[in-house]
Image (tube, rainbow over all chains, first blue to last red; front, side):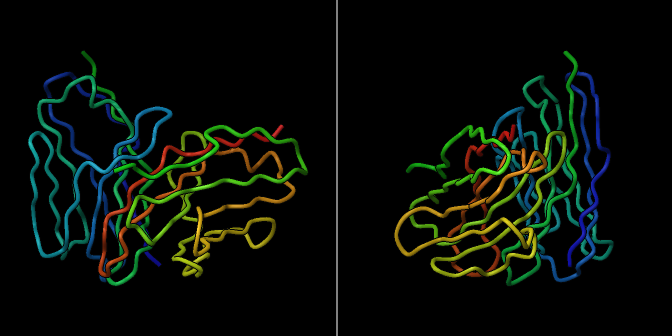
Length: 112
Length: 115
């Protein structure tokens, strides 16, 4: 089955700096890669996703890149703000099947 | 358009009792997934269901746990004879199920505490 590794497990940045979270996956059939943000005590919320036919996707301060050859994808948050503080999960889904495999999560702390 | 609904939000049970967790998917969604999250840990897949069918239950313990998604009504995750190790947040997610890889949307979760 799919295995998703995520790092770092914790990340502290100064407000205004950029944050990068990296994930690798094992199943070459995976073709959908969502990222979720989970604030303390709340539900995971989709913030951005990318499909395997695209190498990069951007939405305001958030961008995701995908390297299918190397089987890794990354989340980039620019101009971080305190409200970006949360746990971020990457995930991968093999094509034609809906089971999503999540990474372990990255706890991001943005220091004002 | 209401999002994914779960109830109860908090559930306290004593060891040996049964826990029933309910999930109503988003309107128009026919696929439901259950995940378990232990404190300070990630989301662990438990089971994937479509209406009246269990598609994948590979993440669900073989004993004491069961799930259903009937033709009418919410999906139910049932835990019999709960033990302290069952204490966790249980999240349900739903998706359209139109084929390919569609997005899963999560409910607010049920936080189960076993005394």
